[in-house]
Image (cartoon, rainbow, N blue to C red):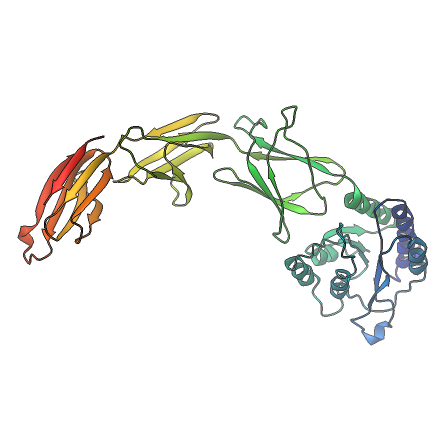
Length: 415
């Protein structure tokens, strides 16, 4: 801080601007300040990597003490950023509030500490600190590479830039900031709503807020108040969910976050008195193996506009490929009412049930050899039972029995 900026030492410029800041902040309600300093007690030749001290703790009415301490500072020793951030995390009062660090330096870490690692470790412990870092001097690229991982970095090469950076930081730290999340339909209109949303801290991954998307009285997405100190990751819990990462909120402004979220509905239908009790359908994006949802039959569910593959967990399973979901439309998928297969056996059997498809045998299910009777709901169709007595030692005694299952009718399969 002994080098020069606009004809004065960097330290003198820093003192001048910090004093103005203290005066300005002292006039605000519910704002308390403290001052931690590093590299100011021990001469640089001693290479003291513990030279950081809370010179003025948080308390109301400490403005004069802050200004006197600032004006009396002299740069002497090493630049120890990591240790200073770690110590500053414990400087804040335990009472609820927004904890803001403004770190001013004209150098990079000179001790063995890793500022990035310290910042990440604090976040993992739930200590939410995202320092504003002001790098003074002409090493902007080096500073940015070093400090971007720690917090929001700003560079100042002149007194005017320094003052402007301070003004921006104070504005971001204290001003009210609003946002609205526009869930767009396929025509780009912000008309989708009634969907849960989750906001995470983009740096730590910590869950910050859950909201249900809501339209206000004018039919527009409702206004949210967001802390501009965070960068956000947003998850909108449509089916399937949609994501937006590293959302930067501009302080003191109304921010608009737009996401494509056009939706339609799929309704699965199976009517009749002879019916499945808990039939479900596996829904996947078209040509994907990942399950999106197991939807119960005779219910509707909203999905993002697109193409889906359906696997109905009936007996046998029924598959539909490339089912289209259109904006604000309901796509109905209906299967026939099942029939009933009554299986009865007088002896122990090994039985497998198949149906024919494209001249191929397709397996449906096996019947346990110890089963003497069983009732099975099955989709209408033609089937083949392949069976043999468990005590038989010759393959030629395998039996093939063709049978038909009809909707709402009982079919008996007896051995």
